[in-house]
Image (cartoon, rainbow, N blue to C red; front, side):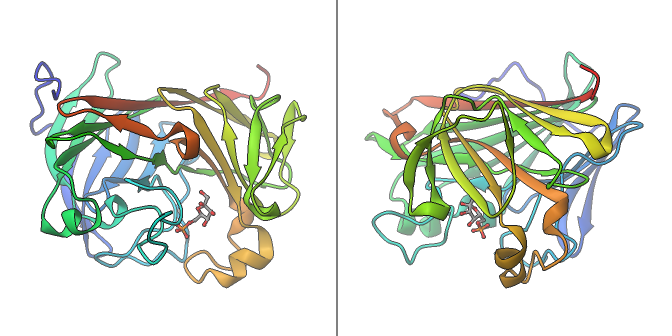
Length: 299
Ligand code: TA6
């Protein structure tokens, strides 16, 4: 089901390298620079030319095989958060700690460099998720960023999964930032025992530990006045939005985040979780799409 019209190969400005001891693809073009680790097909950096970095990586991230990276865009799959049936299984599934196959690069219609990486089932994945599948991430890095997470069911029976592109965005000060686009949406608040509320704020301000799963297919805009910019997060085929910042106390308990770094990050995640989980019949595929762009504060 992969889009065979897209030919991926080697390209100038695209380099297979090793960062912090992990294999990665570094992109450096006139439009932007970026970095994607093969482990977890993990986007760790995106910086449009002339702009400050948009994707946040923890200064205390631990770079080790099989260890989830703190920051960037982790892929949560095939479950989100704790596994409902088997809570001892790794949080957010296994995709983010598995090494993906790098399938090459191409230049897309917008002149961005698009990379493709894939992960298929094996004995390790089948022990946790007993189905044949292929997961593909296509990431286009340029003046704008586009992510496509494609799941293909290669099993002989239907399967159900949750998914998230757990994006960590860089903000100059989360205490001054806000998120618009969620007004009227229902959300389950993990900080208040998953109690359900309706979002009343036109622009959601982060004033403490925030961990909310919104039922929303709408675009969000992160407004960052101290940086004089806003980050627009548009999405397709995603019915859940997660907003997360651990704030001081929780951050201090997370060694790979640390007591000082939390004001510089805000997660606005494009997902399909809980009642929005996806079921695919054999041979079917689903694509979650996210497009990220910057806008000056004036607009
Ligand atoms: O997306 C928000 C969340 O589910 C929070 O509950 C918090 O745990 C965060 O993800 C980070 O999870 P991690 O497993 O990467 O420590």
